[in-house]
Image 1 (cartoon, rainbow, N blue to C red):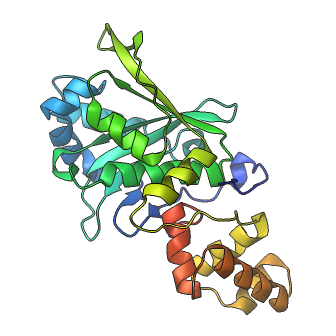
Image 2: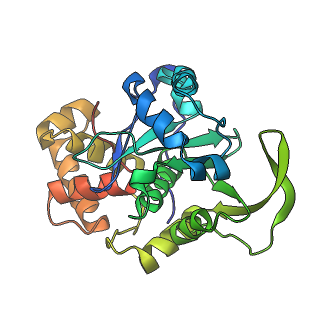
Length: 273
């Protein structure tokens, strides 16, 4: 998948952080009310074993983490979401991107015990990475896990991360101790290839939308008419119709509504806050 080219946007002009959804998993922004569920999820033995969260984990730790979550323009330099599974809005995990400022980012995620075993981790990882490639123009996303965390490695591979079998000795630290790790990288092309081969949702990752088509798709997401889109973008209504026709073709959608759903699944657009 060739990421759509978006011109850099000054931090002061950044839109609100996006909400991403594929119809099964939704990534939303953290809230103070998530603290109790975060504390409960991070007290799970597997969370302590495979992540770097404090152990034992307390409600104060959760509140401290929430207090450090970036907001506003700062969020775009370190995106973080809460994993939920509608219709429930309960915290079911967290996922974040740590940008390196040079076209790359490291992704980290943790899933609550009650959210595991349903493929939600792969969906969340796919949503975040697809959005990062299309909206941030990233060239690569890096993942790592401590050796032995087979579930996380399989999830990463299912999404398209290239993860060699060999371990990197003493690569990362956990609570003051060095641990061997697996490392994987994901590019837009490997994400698209994995999605075409193994995504049972039939997600289409065909020709990339142009910058203007992305603008039109985002206006479609909030339900605007062709006339309203034309007025907002300063183009003719006929041009909007042509863009909509192209969007439907590229996303293999039969209607504007279906195009919006596909755009949400691919992280090309987001629901308004």
